[in-house]
Each structure stands twice: as C-alpha cells, then as structure tokens.
Image (spheres, rainbow over the protein chains, first blue to last red):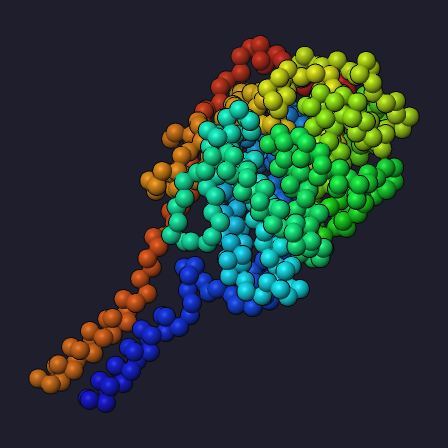
Length: 461
Length: 64
C-alpha cells in the first residue's frame, strides 16, 4: 500500500511539474526558439498566399475574395445576373457584410504571429534571422493596412485625430483587449512598421514581402491617407525600378497564371502547387454576371485598347485572369492623381498619358483642353477630398477602373471617393449599398466583451 | 485506518492532476449568433422595374 502511495505521489509530481516545462505564453502554443522555427511560423501564412487549397482570405485575398469585391462594386452588373448559376453569388455587399468579422480576426491572428516573431527572435544578425524579421514587419504592416481600408472610414485629414482608427497591438499579449487608437495614430504605426521592414533591404522573393513590396504598400498607405508628396516620392522610386509593360509583354504578364512577370511586384499563387480547381470555380463564377455597360463604355478606343479584349468577350462576360497582385501600373496612377490633387495638371497628365500610351494603339495624349467632360451620371461624384470631380481627376479614376478591373480595386475606389450609395435588383427586389456598408463591422464579440472597443457606425443589432 | 488515509490522500492528489488543465480562456462563441442585421430588401417600384427592363434590353441588343 505504501509503495502504491509513493508511486502515486511520483506521478502527481511529474504531472504538475510538466506544466511549467514548456514555455507557454500563447495559450496552447509554444514560442519558437531558432530562426528556422520562426521562419516556419511565417511560411504558414506565406504558403496560404500561394496555395489556393489553403485559402488566403485576408492578406492578399484569393480568387474568390477578389471576385467578391468585384461583385460588391459596380464593375459587374448584378441586375443582369444569370440564374440559377448566379444564385450562390453575393447580390451585394450586404450579403457578405458579417463575414468581415472573421476577416478581422484572421488579420489579427497574422499580426499576432508577426508580433511573436518581432518580440522573440534573437537571431537578428544572421541572414535568415534578418529575412524573417523583415518579412514579419512587412506582413504586419500589410495586415494593418488591410484593416485600415476595411474597418475604418475613408481618410479625412481634417478629422484624423478624432476618427476611429484601429486597435494597435505591437506586442503579443493574449490577455490584451486594446481599445481603438485614432486614425492618425494608426496610420503613423503602419508607416513605421513598413519603414522598419524596408530598413532590412530584404530581396529574397521566396519570403514574398520584400523591400519593394513594403515600399509599394507604403505608397498605397500614403495615397489612401492623402499624403500626396510622400506618395509621389515612393511611387516614382518603384516605377523607375519596375517600368511599365506594353503590347505582348503586358498581355503575357496579365495572362500568366502562376509566374510573376514584367512589372508585377507581388502576386498570389506563384510558389504553390499547380492546380486550378478553386481558381477555376471563381473564373466560372465571374461569368454569371456581365460587365456593366458603364465600364464597357469607358473603353472609347475599343479594340485599340489592349485591355478591351483582355477584360471581357462579346457577351460582356469576364475573360480576364482574376488577379491578386501589386504592380507598378498602380504607382503610375497614384502619381498622376497625387499631382492632380496638388493642382499640378502638367505632371498629372504626364503620368496619365504614360499609362495610356502603353495600352492604346495610336494613343493621342490628353491635354487639359481635350480631357473628356465629367459624366454627370457616373456613380462617383466627388474625389477623395470631397470636392466635385474635375475632368482630370475623372479621367484618372476612369483609367484606374479600366486598368484594375477584376483586381479588387473598384470597391475601394468607391469607398475612397465619396462612398456613393447605389442599388441593384435581384428577384424583383431592390438591394441598397448604403454608405455605412463601406466600413465593415468589428466582431460583435469584441464589442460585447465590454472593454470599450467602439463599433463602426450603422451596426447596432 | 491507515489504508483509508492513504486512499484519501491518493484520491486528493489525483484530483489535483485532473484539475491542472482547466482552460482559463473561455471558448469562442459561434459567429453565426453574432451577425448584424442588414436592412431587408424592398420590392422594386414600377419605375425601378422599368429601368431594369431597359437595362436588360440594352444588354440583349448590345450582345447580338
């Protein structure tokens, strides 16, 4: 009996002591120790960008995510949806608004992993350690940028100290429930994180978020937050390194299914397995809804514009590869619009015409007097600063709409430029995209937790 | 008496082991129960229905 008792004591001692053997900070997980282990932590998220079977819903967005943003926007005409195939596609943003709560949590999970790496990686001076750290900073910056665009209202410089920003979490703490910082604090943090990534000058493409990618996102951040001079400076640097493609080189780049070609800086599905099943489903789904007549009518040059036949067929059904990517063409239009907002029409036209010259055969450069008039029936009525559209800004926005069709850009352009309300029809009913839908709801759980996190306007029950 | 004592102490020690893995973090609730309501769609008015029909007609004409 005594022996049995002593054995039991030994078992209990072992069981209770083992709890403290493993260094457990994140609940149920262990902290890596070597650079290889931290790299493996990162690779899980990087693999999701490249592997459509794993699903990337929040970092770059897989093909379904990209397609759904096109469905939410006015690029594809919901009122012309073909049924019954179109029945499973979202009619409008309201059909999927609550799914953004999951996206919010997923983004913070990635941020959490990046914070663990930044806080705990000790091998800061080895080659691998530097790559891992650089990627963690860049990925964190990208995730926060995505959060900013999804869950905060469009930037208003006059209210940047009052506007609700993000819950900025810089260190991993599973117990933390931070409240929302203001917009300026959030933007400053994202800028700092991306700049931290850039200081490493990381160029290894297998880590995806290289120095150039971090710079591209920095340019996007400056553009979104109307810091025109900074947007121009960074974008010009990228554009010089990644000159625009034209003709067959452009088509080759845009139609490449897996290869990152031409002036593409970052693209999904590059390093993953070659398989088309879920991408193929998205491509089929893109054809349940014709391209809107308003977008088609922007192609004034029709077949002389290389994007015309690249984008849709004679039945106005999508033919373009669904692309989740970052390319320097965007930087060109960022520069054009930034100069336009600075009232520098000459430079704005220079960059607008540069892009058009690469796309349109027999291109005739716009001048201030030959710019098309603003379309009074267009959905966007005001620019990013709230002023009525000028012919120059209107031309730049239209060019951007043609260039980035089927690349999840239009929805955010609508958000950035006034959040216009519009409606679509389905099954005899009218579905309205209301202003508050452009800013997604934070998870209701976080609000109900009672720590003071403020929900976005419009989501009350 | 001694045997009962050993048994009681042993049971107490085993119970200590069993309580060691209480999850301090409450389980996540299902998001399906935390959806926000969106306004219900409205029926199209006659004017809106006409506008949609014209849109469909323009599309059918354009693709011929």
